[in-house]
Amino acid sequence: MTSNADLFERACRHIPGGVNSPVRAFGSVGGTPRFIQRAEGPWVWDAEGTQYIDYVGSWGPAILGHAHPDVIKAVQESATHGLSFGAPTAGEVELAELICQLLPSIEKIRLVSSGTEATMSAIRLARGYTGRNKIIKFEGCYHGHADSLLVKAGSGLLTFGNPTSAGVPAEFIQHTLVLNFNDIEGVKAAFAQHADDIACVIVEPVAGNMNLIKPVPGFLETLREQCTEHGSVLIFDEVMTGFRAGAKGVQGITGIRPDMTTLAKVIGGGMPVGAFGGKAEIMDCIAPLGSVYQAGTLSGNPVAVAAGLVTLKLLQEPGVYDQLEKQTRVLAEGLAERARAAGHAFSSDYVGGMLGLYFTDSVPTSFAEVSKSDTQKFNRFFHGMLDAGVYLAPSAYEASFVSLTHDDAIVAQTLKAAEQVFKQL
Ligand code: KE4
Image (cartoon, rainbow, N blue to C red):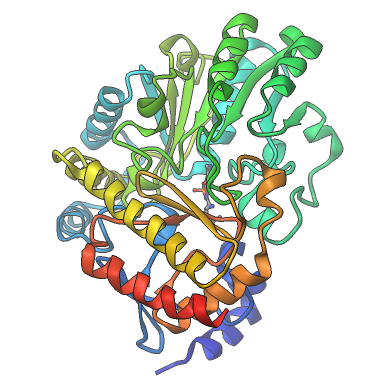
């Protein structure tokens, strides 16, 4: 058996940082990343055979629990018919129809292979549709690694303290306006100043890349009003929240209708699927119909689509989201209760199957507030829980994820472990 440390040492010889995505490197929490060998339900096992209750869930896709038998079967069956054709398939039509049915704001949709592709394409489309250049994003929100969005971003950039990436020429981000999440007056001022030169606003309607930060009343409504008034495209980046925060994402919870939505994670069920969609008049500007080019060799890959279709269909079972949010609520409240009983400044929040944990007295509502969290104490908590067999997101600036297999026993086991860890922090 090869140890995690041996694997990491080998990985670092040929893979930058030993990982294929920075946040996996344990860079901010320290220690050796766990090389996961297999996963099932709420559990993962690392290369040393150690079992963990998993709250990363592949950063959102594993909402049914890992290796759901129906999803695995669909992937196996699809693979026996071939892996990729570079031609349209019936599955893509079915997935497009299902997503448009579930999210009425999406009249037409284009499948891609990642969330980054989805947001990059949506931005280009908004610029092509409006003929404008400026885009608005919010500090701490992460929309993937497309150049014009790597400005004061969250997730791995925030985790490593580099919110703006090297290698992006100033010219590429000169049109990116970065505002403060939940700053209603700031949004109004930006539109007043730039009036009709704003192509779009892209926002995580519930932020999940600076830990979990919910919109304050009026914030999303202001984005909707200002975009409508100025002819700008409102893009809800629901890559993380789509079919995770609720049956119809955050747009289903708030009733606010974006002009475009980006999706990934859950819609692929763990396989590479992303998507951008919205009003037909906007989407029809995309090639081959329109002049905004976008393409992808593996877009709508049949094996990936098979996983996504089964995942979304299983999520239509009655009561699924009530159950998911109930488990997440019990966990969030239980953690806060135990942390405070041990004397720690701690708060938690949740929406659907997304969980936010903060070593602060109250739930943050902004990037500035979440930045005051005691990240050193989070790092100690992370490792205490890891040693106790609970794998949380390895960053104080990430949300954690609950699946439908995190039943009462799993939640109770997690809380029992946390109670001991909080006492020793
Ligand atoms: P991907 O390109 O990683 O599929 O999606 C980018 C993306 C876009 N929009 C939102 C709201 C996202 O959360 C993401 C990716 N999320 C991170 C987790 N914080 C992915 C984990 C990683 O980078 O390894």
